[in-house]
Image (tube, rainbow, N blue to C red; front, side, top):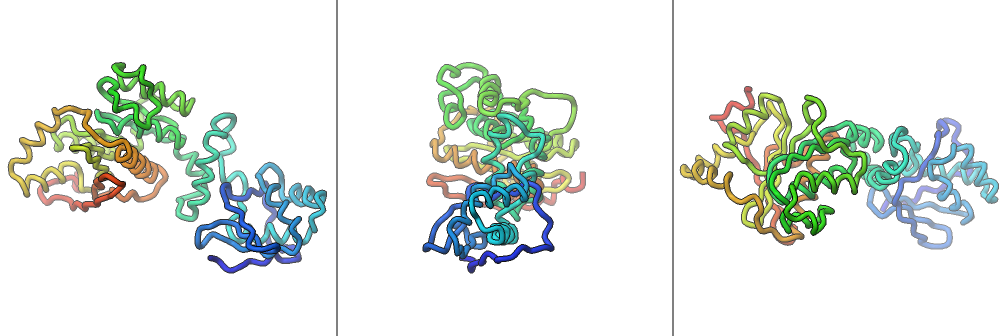
Length: 360
């Protein structure tokens, strides 16, 4: 736990006044005793505030991003909070990174239901700082401008597509094939009445309900920021070559005998690519190419426990968002197998010497 940060009793003139100060959403408030308030639980973020007058804590509710710092202090004075203590508390919270300008949480042009819907996402991003490559508002703005294609067949496609839209991705192009199966209802927002209907249409409708305004159909020829590839419906070398020529980042999701596999996430022209993995497998088993061809034409819908499926979908969405947000996903150069009980097995892959992916 961080040591206490006593609120100073005098203003700090060197700090620029905040336009609309906001306390980080979701911070836990705990009283250790009558004069010690703890904000936050996470080590490295939690702060202890020594409060001589408990009335000063009324200020915390005023730090909601709707008023200027001057307005906060004026309202605090109306609530009979000592001005020096109020200013000192804001200084302490700002120095600890717990108070930020409101415009850094949500994009200013995000309004109405969309703003309400993404407020929780912004709060989670704020609590993840400083690991973010930018402010929460910048990250959400980047997501809103992004296009992700979810293509192929398999039970992971629907929950991943819906969750990406709920996380603020502005365009989720749904290219899923086949009809809705009963297993597709897990964690997707699809209804029993959708069974038998085209999966792509049902997922588009689910996205429209969960994240209205998200674009779900192709628009123009702009390259997607990421393709989430469900399985391999063609030889891996052809799939890899097509992505490499377009310099198209892509994340592979497969499901084999109840075990989802997330990755690799490939960033052409850097390998390893999907063809590299096939070459490595062929090195270990010369009969693999024939087996892979049979797998590519096998049934798309396979058994998978609901908990395992949702764990894998959540992990895959996290990897996709890390890529969109400008971070480095864990599945670059590796695959992650998701087993029962949330057990993860990570396998690293190197570029294969017989593959030219890194030189394309």
